[in-house]
Length: 261
Image 1 (cartoon, rainbow, N blue to C red):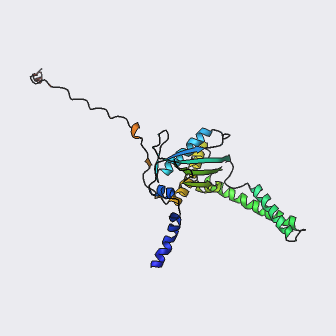
Image 2 (image 1 turned 120 degrees about the vertical axis):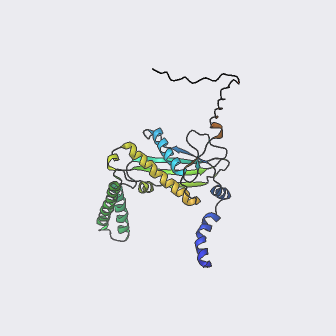
Image 3 (image 1 turned 30 degrees about the vertical axis):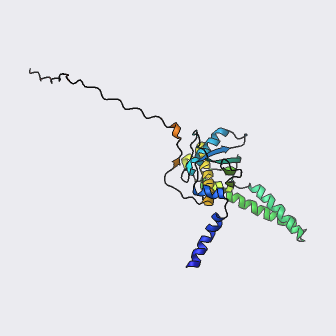
């Protein structure tokens, strides 16, 4: 039984025992986290996309940590989740079928020629290139059939930084295929709604980021979202109005009698 327990604890010891002291301190006592999202300048409606993705990240991250809402000044020592989206373009979460087929065909042809089959190298590359391209096309069709829409390519680099610490506490790369797999399908009435599609793409991206962050730090999910409140921004409570003063010798008002007809 003791051997089994050690085998169970070994991965946890490897995960948390070799971390930097500041990372371990943040894992045990995380400070509030603010979220910033940046995108390439050539993205159409760049500000709208940045706000959409930042809002989805805050909503998802607030079930693990205390999150600083948009427009609220972070407290001293707060960490920052910096999201650098480097590619946000129409397409798919995987390379195009033609690119997959051409790359596979060239690679197989070169390997076949190097193996001595110079006469059949061209046909080997052609066969395997067509096969790989058809498989990539079928994968794209399955994805679009599952979602009901063609997803956007999203590729990003994410860093968790803290003031006074030069090296990031955490760094992760987000691959387009991961984001596509995390997206949920839309009902038939929303599959042509660009706003709903963009919302679901942002939610899928947030799921991937928060999942990776949670796996690396071992945080548990809570049922209620937690947001930081700036104490200086709380409105002052209005003072209660004093009760009207009653004169001690004021005559009492007699009730009116009912008038008889």
